[in-house]
Length: 164
Image 1 (tube, rainbow, N blue to C red):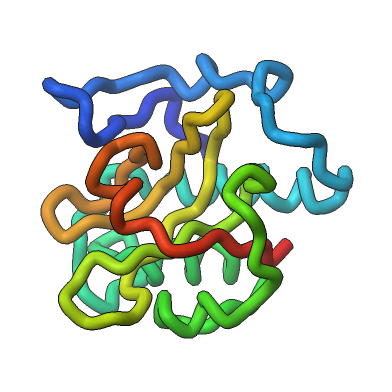
Image 2: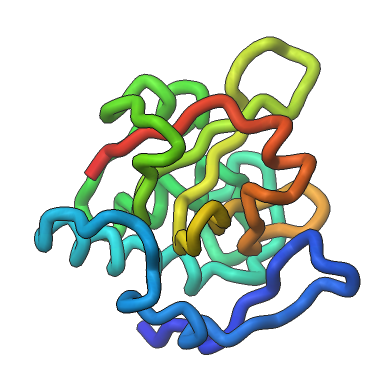
């Protein structure tokens, strides 16, 4: 499976397409993870990025359409890592970590609705200083990469978890 060379980042006006190769591993500021989990994380991220541009579909887990937890669930499942299917259930797995400890492959959880429970998840794909970029699926734009620095996502952020 070939990884796309560019991805669209939500929030920039107009939205920008950037070259994935502009984020080389050697420039990342996240702490070095154990080699085995780093390799697994890289493969999972590549899988998730291969879904970039897939339209949103509630309950979807295929290239025809997927929701946020479907993207994360499928990306991990393709590498033989079992996760719960719903975002609020995924938020019970792994180890809760501080945002400053986040590294590639970790999960970010959000509350975006009126109900007082987690209802959105994203997969960390890159970290540059305080800028954490994550891939997820939105109802309006489908699968794309966003920055946690964006006001909407920063405000809705609840917790980060490590499952690798």
